[in-house]
Image (cartoon, rainbow, N blue to C red; front, top):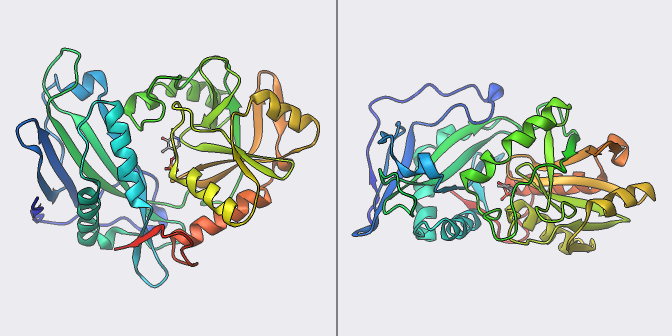
Length: 353
Ligand SMILES: *Cc1c(COP(=O)(O)O)cnc(C)c1O
C-alpha cells in the first residue's frame, strides 16, 4: 500500500512547552485510512488535521462500535524521538477490534505510517521535563445506518497532541474510592478492549468519587463485587509483605502495556510478583495487620500513580503513610528513564524515530 502525503497550506502556532495541558491541542497533520468490503483497508494518507464530515446516522455515534489506543513519543536529552513498545499498542488494537467485529489492520504498516507521521511532525514533540507527544490511534464504524449490526465501512485515524507533565507539582499519591454499587465490565463483556463504551460506563461512578473528594474509582469484579479489577484508566498493583501482586487478566481487565512492563522489571529485579485474584477484603485485612506496604496504578498517561488513601464503604485507610512508596518510586524512575532514553533499554522496548 502506498502512503500519500498532502501538505498543509499553513502551519499552526505551536503551544509553549511549559504550559501544556492534556489533550487540548493537536498537530498540523493526521493519518487516515479507510475500509470497505471491496478494497479492505485502503487509501492510507497523511493529510492536514481536519474535522470528519459525518452523516448523523453514522454507526459509531449510535452504537459505539469503535476502538482506540494511547501511547506517547518522547524527546530524549540528545534531541532524538522514541516510542515505548509501540508494536504492542497496534497488537492490542487488533485484539480490541476482534471483540468489536472491526476488521484488523496490518500492525507493521500502521507502525510504519505512525513513524512517517511523527517524522513530519517531529517539531511538535515537546522537550520540557515530563512532556511528550500523545498519540491516539482510533477506528470508527462509518456506515450511515440505524440498524444494529457490525458496520461494513470504517475509518482508521491517528492524531497527535503535545501533553504536559502528569505530575507538574511532583510525584504525589492519589486518593481512590472503591465502589460497591457500580461495575465497569463483567466476565464475557468487552472490558479487555479499549472501546468507547467502557469509558462512558465509568463516568457516573467517577463523578460519585469526585463528589467525595476522590480522584479515581477502584473497580471490583462485576459478579461478586469482591475481586479487584483496575482503577480508572490504569491497572493496579499491591505490595503486601514485600510481595508485588496484580489482578490476573480475566477478560474484564484492560491488559496494560505499563502493567506488563512493571511485571517484567520486577522479574528482572528479583522482586516476587504474582498475577492472581486479589479481593478487597484481603487488602483491608493486610492493612489491619500492618502488611499493606503500597498500592499504585500503572498506565501510559501517569506511568505510575501511587495511592495514598482508599475508601471502601465507610472505612478509610491511609496507605504507606500517605507517602510515595519505594517500589512505586523505583518503577516510576526506571520506566521514565527508559522512555526518555536516560538509561539503557533492558528488553527491546524502545523504537527510535
Ligand atoms: C489504557 C488503559 C490502561 C493502561 O494501559 P497502558 O497500556 O499501560 O497505557 C488500563 N486500564 C484501562 C481501562 C485503560 O483504558
